[in-house]
Image (tube, rainbow, N blue to C red):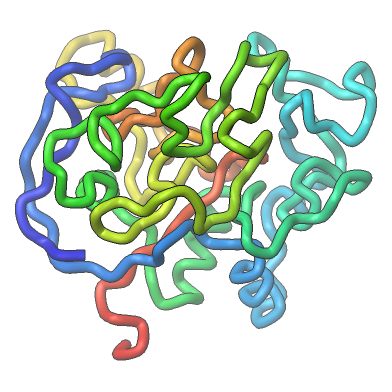
Length: 278
């Protein structure tokens, strides 16, 4: 991916409380990117080579979306205010929705991985997690100040299925009009101008950066104090819908603690040198 002037953020934020604006210009160097997010097949090679145990496996549980549970919902505990997320014992990257459901698919993004897990994989692979400015530069695909990797056309429930997001009424009914109720293969839909797949939608992607708001306002300083230690995620996921989580836009952003994992969070890595030349 060529370096040069890079754009980050937007002058027309949809969720200004997330720190989406303003539009800023910076510089990035030429980098080498995986075409898609890290897959279960690739992550399994890492685990086989190193014996690595993910944090969800060490904790013994992780969060699963309520429609994908392998046990009755009333037997699980939800997150206050986000009751669609349920704690499930035994959920991990091998069995993302719990041990009584189907195992992970080889060509789909690895999920149920924390920022710490992603960083460990990246180090083993000889790469790293991208920064926010690198990620946005890559996501724009050479198009400049656009809302999505393909341009400015909005996906919606009836058409324009450019990426894997929610269609229907969140969180109770997903029509899966784009072909996928949960994750899609890492290499699916159309690539952007740099040949990268699923830069938005499908799974949230961990980045190297902390999640903080760029503002000197008192409210932002207070928010940053609460968010201290959180890591930045980009791209949105298959659970995003304009009515609830309109974060499948390039400038959109969120954060989570570095030990958190879920069924809609994965990562992709970047290399400072061509992997075959490192």
